[in-house]
Image (cartoon, rainbow over all chains, first blue to last red; front, side, top):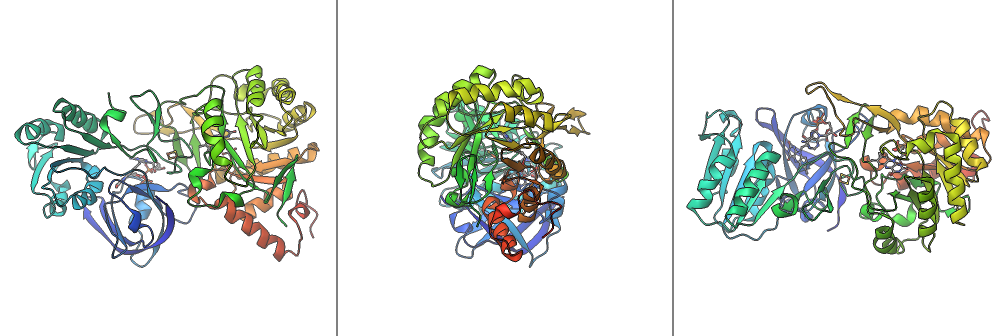
Amino acid sequence: MPKTIVKAEVLAHKLIGPEVCELTLKASGLVQMARPGQFVHVRVADTIVPLLRRPISIADANAAAGTLTLIYRIVGHGTELLAQTLPGSRLDLMGPLGNGFVLEAERPLLVGGGIGLAPLVYLAKALCTSPITIVMGGRNKNEMYWQDIFQSICQNIHITTDDGSMGRQGFTVDVIDDILTGDSFDMVYACGPRPMLEGVARLAKERNVRCQVSLEDHMACGVGACLSCTCAATDGKRRKVCTDGPVFWAEEVFD
Amino acid sequence: MLAVDIAGIKMKTPVMTASGTFGFGPEYSDFVDLNQVGAIVVKGTTLSARSGNRGCRIAETPAGMLNCIGLENPGADQFLTMTLPKLANYDVPVIINISGNTVEEYGQLAAKLSVTGVAGFELNISCPNVKEGGIAFGTVPQSAASVVREVKKNTTLPVIAKLSPNVTDIVIMAKAVEEAGADAISLINTLLGMAIDTKSWRPVLGNTVGGLSGPAVKPVALRMVWQVAKAVRVPVIGMGGIMTALDAVEFLLAGASAVAIGTANFVNPRASVDIAEGLKDYLVSRGLKQVQDLVGQVNNKL
Ligand SMILES: Cc1cc2nc3c(=O)[nH]c(=O)nc-3n(C[C@H](O)[C@H](O)[C@H](O)COP(=O)(O)OP(=O)(O)OC[C@H]3O[C@@H](n4cnc5c(N)ncnc54)[C@H](O)[C@@H]3O)c2cc1C
Ligand SMILES: Cc1cc2nc3c(=O)[nH]c(=O)nc-3n(C[C@H](O)[C@H](O)[C@H](O)COP(=O)(O)O)c2cc1C
Ligand code: FES
């Protein structure tokens, strides 16, 4: 799949939750190749500080309109600068990068924690011919702006919050067991913090349900050249999160 | 106009890619026509595969980055069977950056890898990220010289010694490798550095320390290239923080006969080709016919 660099025009940029922005770009030439689970490498400024690009998942892509949506959390200097870009300005995007989700599921269960829900939006849209169940985890109800996004694309929504201010109190992993027992699923897709991914993968394995997880690591090149993002795989070899992933079959990377 | 010959390696442009920042080349082929790159210096290769360092391997710093990859690579055999055949599709010199735990290993690597399709070797005697070998060879002149001699004994291909900036006197190192028979000298490798997370009070990098690269190191690199170029007769390949064609011009003026682009590839995958084009424009704008007209000309204003 060819990758490219585009100067994408910012069409809309808004705050959708605490410290979380939704950025819509015109990225013709890039969106047409974008698959759920892939990411773009964004140059947040033309200056040499910050120097490196920032990897951000593709939260939605509309090939016909040529538009691309990113949803990101402001966590440091790079994302702070990104948040300041105004409609009409242009952003240097490299992509689409990485391997996305395998879109073979009749009964998918999606599990996302925090900003890890971003790539699941595009995934849910791509799987829309199947009934979709999603488990969304967050710190508190203020972070559950995700419900507005997912309610029109997912049939069953389960919510957990760390403080119990919305949905069940606890982590996503705490409710997955019941959900997997109550219904039959043929695929679990997960994105979020590593402990969550490991927990979800373990439960899916116990139930014999196939599971794909999306990993994160610090990245410089994003194209498999610098080896800053590699992880150990269960076959004893190494994998590059940027090109072999970020989406992996759970058994490929977790024992 | 841009063509250069570095120790017998013929390049279409004087702009090469720096080891460890461009993979083996094909990783970037969606963005750059590899045939337009001066030369590809591939990732540091060792006799057997290495898995590299654990934990976080990069950290961004002001106008630069730290890395502690730890020479992860598939090993020389895998390189020969899997990677080299792919590079044969391109008309570009391939230089192998080699790294050994012992002097003998450098020789074995050179012997093993002296095959068709390989244009020369760059000796990584300056990697700050591995406990054995690596920088130890790069900071002691006698050790650096013995590595060069051992490699020269084992190959007829051009040998480039890559120097570490983590020394008190870079000129002593340069003279030692030149005397030992190095056909060219490249510099600089990364500068040893560190970053600490103020939340956790722990080092950011898994290896605690790592190598600094990018624009932040450019003035240091330029100074060292200038000192070395004055002191040796073999060609010098300059690198360290080059982001633009004008950065490259500075290195050429300081005495480098070619330059290599490292960290800039991460920011602009087309950097090596863009910089070569910019260099051409610069020559034209100055009424110069060839890059050689710039080499070492600092102080000799046109
Ligand atoms: C494949 C992939 C997809 C991602 N998708 C999203 C997304 O859709 N939405 C979102 O909000 N975030 C996403 N992230 C995380 C995002 O890249 C970081 O939050 C961002 O780089 C932080 O940059 P900063 O300058 O604001 O933070 P700083 O902490 O100042 O960044 C310093 C350096 O660390 C790196 N870094 C910091 N946090 C992370 C992290 N979690 N993962 C990787 N590198 C990091 C930065 O890239 C930068 O080089 C993704 C990461 C990866 C690897
Ligand atoms: C991620 C990374 C990996 C590197 N790996 C190697 C290597 O394997 N062998 C080597 O000789 N130099 C290695 N280097 C050093 C570069 O080749 C170059 O000397 C240095 O980065 C300075 O140039 P720059 O500022 O343009 O990046 C590496 C640098 C980086 C950033
Ligand atoms: S980010 Fe460079 S190899 Fe993955």
